[in-house]
Length: 158
Image 1 (tube, helix red, strand yellow):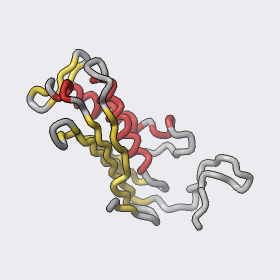
Image 2 (spheres, rainbow, N blue to C red; image 1 turned 90 degrees about the vertical axis):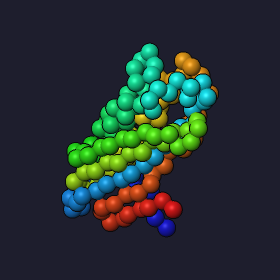
Image 3 (cartoon, rainbow, N blue to C red; image 1 turned 120 degrees about the vertical axis):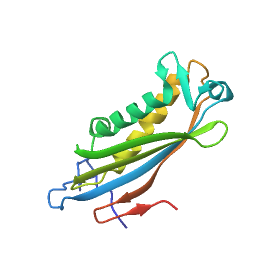
Image 4 (cartoon, rainbow, N blue to C red; image 1 turned 90 degrees about the horizontal axis):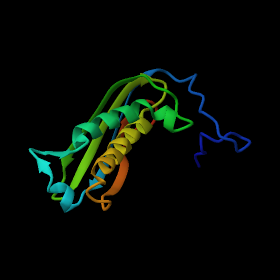
């Protein structure tokens, strides 16, 4: 059975030692599904929600990118990574739901799945923040890793 890598032999938290690993190209994709309400959706104009705080999707995209860049400040045992790419897109999935998709890349000794998940989370939370004046009924349904490549272990959601 695989052991938790962030716990040492004394059951104390530790940052994983990646010093012996090779630098490789690593990518990760994640998504968040956000269930907006009819009140929020009725405020769409040309594919974007306009609020008093500004264009909601554009602001959420920027927040997602910022969250990816700040992941090691938010998640205590994550390594700070030099990101080479971070993209966030938001599109309508159906009548009241939107999907946030993220893709993050780096050339490093450890992967970027936490950065991709942080980007999806930050964008989803920003959607909630910018729309909560209209309703508190917004639900972030899921946040999940879709795929990771590079390093010794890959992953692709089924």
